[in-house]
Image (cartoon, rainbow, N blue to C red):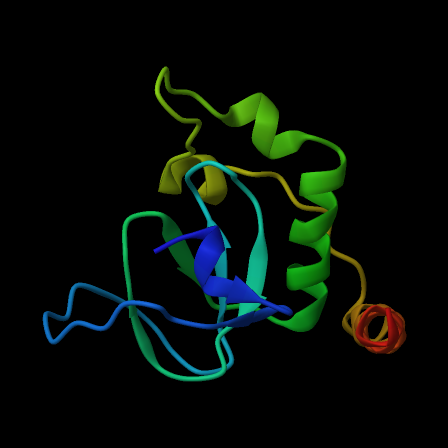
Length: 126
């Protein structure tokens, strides 16, 4: 449904349904599109998703690139709504993203995976 269902960069569903609407497949990632906007997690299973999130099929480089959009406040600038902030699928689709050479993307993603792993270990210690 949203940010409450994202734990440690993976989905952790709290609600179950038999009514299939939008789906995310294992390995794709989910981004929150309602307040708070821009939080990401990797789908560790096939799941039906609610209106508060969007499924995105991409590589690890794109995952980390979208995370930077949270840091540079891109989602905040695109958000609208009086009750709670949200973005649309068009906001995501129309986002300009700089793409590097494929090998460079793989190296950057591998480095970010390593950093994320060590940050997670530190968080578990705390």
